[in-house]
Length: 234
Image (tube, rainbow, N blue to C red; front, side):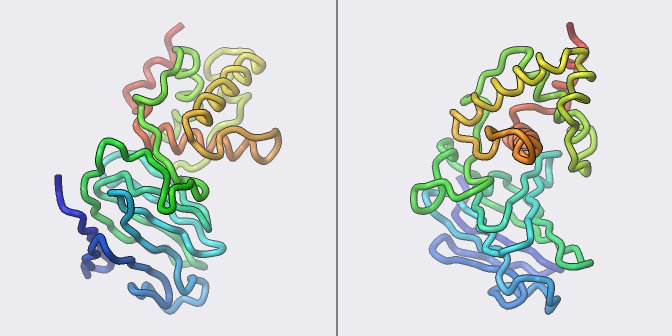
């Protein structure tokens, strides 16, 4: 396995971070991104713990999108949240005011038990834990339910929005009540496996849980574009 060194690249400059240290980026940080007043003084911080590299969003308003440079997978890290860097080659994207930024991050291969909690031993918000395919087993209908929500994202990773339950049900030729029941079962199963943010009440949380479900399903390689053929099977 590779060593524990993290490599961060920004505007052609590379920064190496040893496993024993921490490395922050922002307007006034170890890596100074810009003097943009819309950018947090410290937006993100890298830390090595439990054999993994972790990214903390230490800002209060800006989100960080973590994109796998080798696949359509991506995850969104909300302010105050932490996630393990599960992609070997990532692009970190964020926007402050009208300006968009991107960092490239190379991470050592993670050990097989990468699904443990974050530093301190507890989950600390959205994106803290990666669930692998080995931990979740969907029935054929449950898998089609997930694919109906993720189809547009799998075909075009730049798409952020996920369809409504009604639209996804229509895509499958199901009644809405059937789709809602299958989606509830999927969310309960994922929540029991440790995926945060996928099981909540109706309303705004229902929208967020669909987004979180798609983020994790794609980011954890539970599904990929080849699985879309299942959508048209009876």
